[in-house]
Image (cartoon, rainbow, N blue to C red; front, side, top):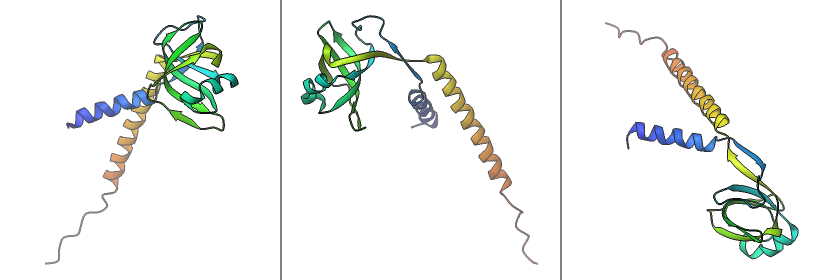
Length: 149
């Protein structure tokens, strides 16, 4: 692999990992497909979906595949459990009865904040590189004395 390819992949990874998200209430009672949501799991909902997501789920994050007044189908990204554990999911689809989810919010990438974070990371990497190259140049010490004749 070329050095430029690896560098561009690393830069893309940094952008993804440092993206700044915002959450806001849903604008409609039923979310549209492809909407990324975060919702609390009700106590009765935790019992209803316990066989699908495991016992004691308290919060889910996922992308809506389909939704109506009775059931929301989500491709799960994350499930938080009572007791503090959090499990990352690989977008497995799970059906939630509507009563199982409360306080749904939409999660979106805030492009302005993400670009600002990416710029600050790039600037920090540039300054660190310059600092380390300067340190390497300064630590050369004195040259070896010539051998005796």
